[in-house]
Length: 167
Image 1: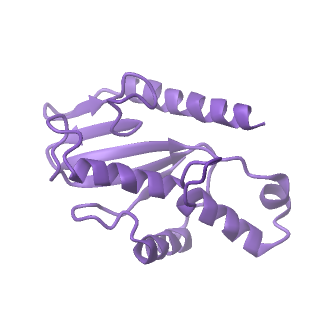
Image 2 (image 1 turned 135 degrees about the vertical axis):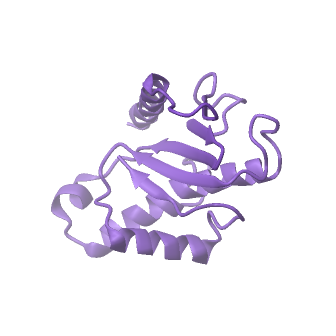
């Protein structure tokens, strides 16, 4: 099952890259930065759109939602626990970190100058989490995510806008 979920995640990232490649950027100053392949050393994020006002980092993520959580919702805490893991889980030997922890680490690399000259360390960053499934985003989810990010110090770097969730 782990191999399937990893393969699915990779296919989802490749799909996001393919969709981004088909988009025509309407401004002369805009440019699209795509890695040579997902996870490559030249990857800043799955898709990066750089404009004069800043850069939008699109991070594609998917995570298996177990049937008791997805279909039955028998426990509110199991749903909140799934969200907590998806967004904020710490990395382990078996699993990578939560989606927003990973995105924040990429912002840290940008701020550290790791991707210069392709992307300046002082660039205003607009993070977008692109999910396979709808996370039922609403104002309460955004408020909870913002509060948890603040509590955990995630995506709190200077010049970083609030995260947007898209599916």
